[in-house]
Image 1: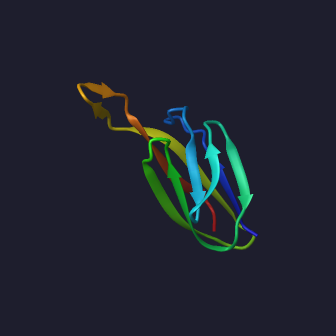
Image 2: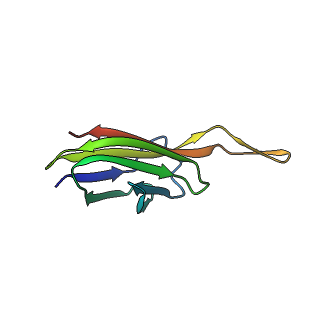
Length: 103
């Protein structure tokens, strides 16, 4: 059975708020900065979705092979600024994901 491992420890990460992670439409973890999470998954194609607490979402698709490990690096990286009324808020973190190794 393949294993999916999520790692959130990047230098660019905002280091606050949860990265809300779902696999194939099902919530699997609210990943905090510095956390690593692993779970068994079925072989085949999967869609991993990450979103921040403000609702911005991103997704990646990957294939898991029997006995393989899919390692995904997750970052809540700042991107852009929010303009609210007459003031500017800090950059909104966007969940970025990349498969580091697998297949």
